[in-house]
Image (tube, rainbow, N blue to C red; front, side, top):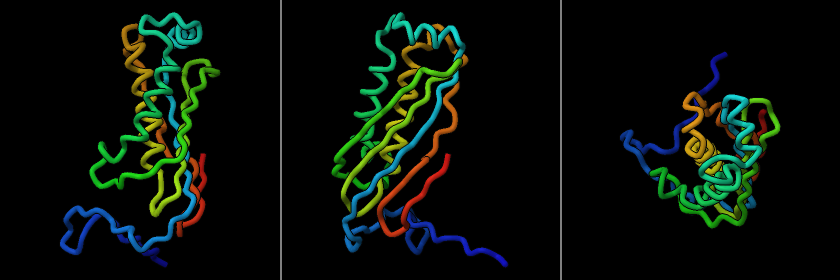
Length: 161
């Protein structure tokens, strides 16, 4: 049996990019969490943990950058709706051997989800980590950016690791 492919929502009948009309959707509580990792040399992670990076508090600045980015998502992603975000949290963990783990959770009560805001927050936090220590580790990699949880809206809940 062939599974049907869902219709893409950001294109009109002529195939041109279009913003989705969410006016008829019900306002519901919505939440999304995105995660990623910044892979690095163990010595770079030690520098971050010790607070010895020349540019300052890497994790603190990256957290702030992620918070600010979530609020600016509609300015960065052309077809995203500006949303009244009610909460953003960006958690950075340097507990591994050679990576910083980032988790960003965004909440709103609205007509569309906050997956893009969570992804934007996590990715900008990762880019900030990279920027702050690139002088000592040019080989860093940002990996596994993904939505790990979503709730609210008619499509229901979604989780993955």
